[in-house]
Image 1 (tube, rainbow, N blue to C red):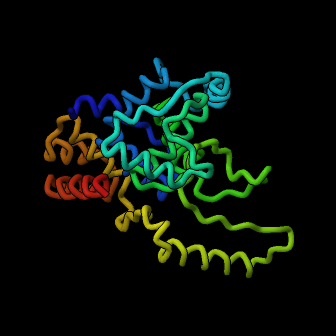
Image 2: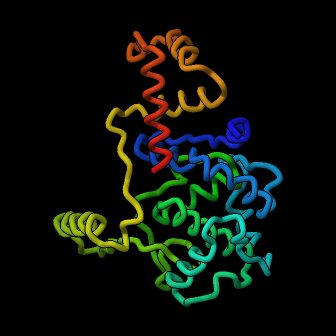
Amino acid sequence: MEKDLLDLKINIKSRIDSSYLELSILLDKPEFLDLLPQLRKEYGVDRLLDLDIDNYYSLLNTFRDEQDFKINFSKYKNAKQLIAYMKENSDIHANPKRLMDRYQLIDTEANLLCYIFRRPPFFAEAIKHAIYCGTVNDASLRTTSAEVVENDRLLSSVSEFGLPRVIISVSSTTTDIELKSAMRVARTLYKTDKRLSYYKPRTDKANKIRTYREWYWMHLSGMRYVDIADEMAKSDDPDLAGLDDNRILKAVNYYKKLLAQ
């Protein structure tokens, strides 16, 4: 099991600490990694694309011409519950088992995975990058954006159903005071509206998420806590001075708790 997880580890190239935290504790979940081989098989991923070099978006656009696909619910636990949820949250109350083109299928299933792992819909792009590229970066997780919306379509999603989200609309006359007021309302909604309770942002009070993730994967590869401490002792980082195996143990257990959320 652990060897299989090592082979599936996602490369996280985010420079933003808060994004790194959020991406890590989704993409390192054993439950998510267990699904990756099946997802890649279903979507015909025979080699991982280089997110920085290969034209990933051009590939997705070719999928618009591939018809007659539907979600394979058999790989999910509580499939009936998922189907019922999708029916309730579809704009057109479509049958989740209906046929669609591969582009729409990928978008829909990425949103479904956001629901399963209790993440808001802006995680869908990161999930698709993980499936097709095995790598995510800062562009994979855009928590805030400003863009033109055409035909009343939010973002570029063609998913069959949508998770609830809070949108702040601005105009050319919007003032900073009005925008700050809208932000306060939005934050209140995330705390009080039951429709949005499926997701709570994570925090890393120690600001050590990159280090804890590194130790977690080192231990998963078979290294003992004392071996990790010995390896870290070779570093010139003053924060690692006097590091012992008990501190490694606590850090890895803390990271495992984050993954279980």
